[in-house]
Image (tube, rainbow, N blue to C red; front, side):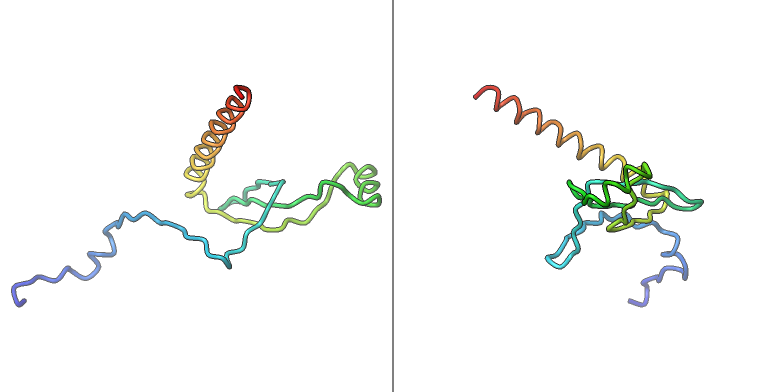
Amino acid sequence: MADEKLPKKGAMENDAIMVRIVLEPQEHTPTYYANHAEVSRGAHDFGVSFAHLPTKFSKEKLETVTDEGELKYSPNVQLVLPPTVIPGLIRALQTQLDLYMQRKQRDEQESKNE
């Protein structure tokens, strides 16, 4: 033990530690359904606002939309992201979309063959 050298103070602070972060949603983790997303950017971050728009609007809301030419709706949730996560997020979304499309095409082909 006496021969063991301790790392210099601050040595660990400069060393990068590579870990894979795995998220495990729990039953109480909030889940939101959104059929509309709006992306924006600021000077130092990106924002994505999500909303669940109804499939049918009230007569009053429909008249307002027709008159104003805009549908104003409050988002259910807003995510603010630093620029460093955007490239990985885009790659992850594209990967998941590609897998979804492959599965959809395979399912459609199988239903045609039946």
